[in-house]
Image 1 (spheres, one colour):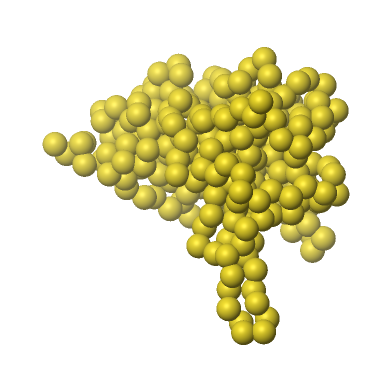
Image 2 (tube, one colour):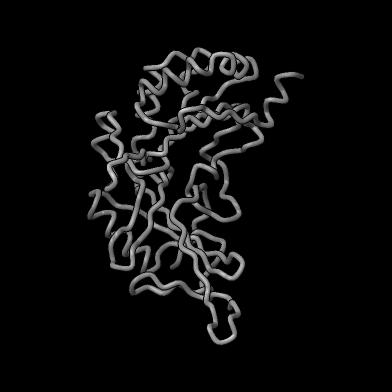
Length: 266
């Protein structure tokens, strides 16, 4: 029997497309997506997480072969304008709350998965918290969310290596988002010494990052799935609860003020 999974998620591995009629240059609604030998059509359930299908069964086998444990895989099918889009997520069978995104390739392999990032997220968060001095947050008030590519060696060693490109330049593929949970008083103090905090995090992490300062409600792992499903950071975040954000990925830090900062001056 087909199971329907409705749960928390985060957008990361989306496949979309549409059909163009070359004779009259009109765009036609796409009704199916082909990934290798699998065809997923809009006659199947949409706007729901669905598992126990040929493509999710095959994905479970690929993940088990790669990581040596059982997984439950599912997809979320939805239309967007003329396109039909699909997103994929998985979770260990014995740890259903630890969801991560993945994408199957057309060659019968895995094109992408962020299993390592999700499995080591708490460990890396604790490690970073121990190495920086931010008394404005509690023991569980620092979350490191790696939205990019992370190897198990990096996660264990806490040494995050940039990728070297063919042109000799390097770039950071980890896409770390660091969240600080605090109250209005804490947000005020953090803002007043943001340069010091950012420098301390950078020295410990050794990578560029985005820094978010929010209320206790800003980041919630149990937040229900958004309109477009997904397994990404955005579905866990309520941006109305953001005090400040700092883009620390360039030489000059860019600060944005969120709606929750209005509470500071009340």
